[in-house]
Length: 246
Ligand code: NAD
Image 1 (tube, rainbow, N blue to C red):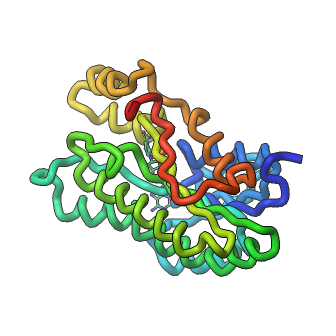
Image 2 (image 1 turned 90 degrees about the vertical axis):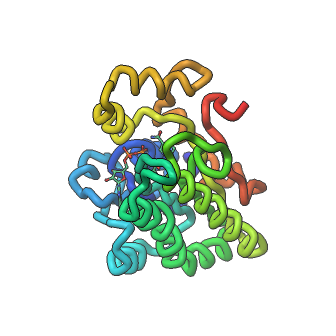
Image 3 (image 1 turned 120 degrees about the vertical axis):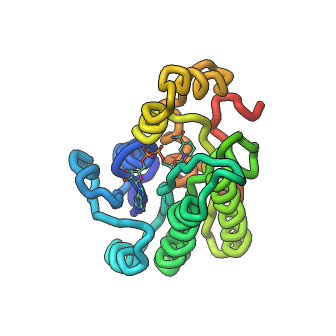
């Protein structure tokens, strides 16, 4: 049996990038995975995984999809977007969008899932929530990431609050803080730069190991945090950053 055998796990933003890699790794470890994404077409080809369209900014869709998912042993809130900007160059729209995608849905999805998580925690001894944060935010400030860093700092705050409130009831909550990860959206940001080759060199240069992370450098940490192996770990902002914060 795998490390997640018998566990029902819901993942948001599982169409590509770290969410997708984690969905596949969780399934390989025996989990019963419900992989969701705003873009249903991206969920095609996820072998061995149940899928459902879910835009996490849509409260009705959250109620419907989480309600139909059944009681969960694990929840990976992975959805998030990056908008660039300093305090002065961030538009009101980008500020609002960052909160609308990166933090408000985590509150709503986790609230919708909590009754089932509590039932499973009572039945099995534990349930686990993993929230996607970043090394950028409260861990470390980065240039041009005003709204992004603010929302990712909020993710860590929400995670610690949940961990504190539910530690006696079998629910653990941890935040994942990746370094720079080679995913479709990162590739998109590189391509959109004025000088893409320089933008890629700059992303690599901020990684002390001299390379970007692969999604499979991150997924094993999520599997660990969702598994019972991490049963004594809660309320942590777990850095998997290739040495940025040494
Ligand atoms: P990605 O950005 O390439 O893909 C993100 C996925 O999220 C897409 O499939 C997209 O359809 C989905 N999505 C976007 N808005 C959504 C919504 N409203 N509802 C549901 N799904 C939605 O993948 P990634 O780079 O692995 O990013 C995933 C998470 O990791 C994000 O929260 C991001 O902030 C975080 N992160 C990424 C990096 C990095 O360097 N790539 C570093 C730290 C943290």
